[in-house]
Length: 166
Image (cartoon, rainbow, N blue to C red; front, side, top):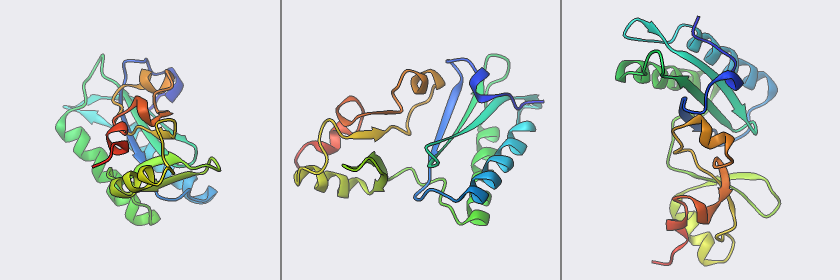
């Protein structure tokens, strides 16, 4: 069986992060996690089980991680993952594969997403600064999440490029 508790995966586990534009209700969250656990239970690369886990952070971010020390994720296995997410997103009316928004906490600590140009405009208006907490969905190792790099100040991530004036 490929599915393991997310917490048991090593820091070097490969990571995929997916944001949702809205926090789904409890029933949708349960269906999302059940479906992804079912997928990961049978996830393979070149006929070898991928030891992997799934987590949902802040009710907005789906994380999938795989320990590649025994079998590495291949192009086909990654395609299978994105295919499952695309299908699941259509079933649950959730966009799971859009990597273009900027995810951040606003002044009231709510998680929001906006386009990159809108985030830059917010920075020009002083609504987003170097200390604005942002979520970095480009991380590729589980250890980065555990080290606090998933939610961090905009100045500490690629988001700092959106703070600079044109």
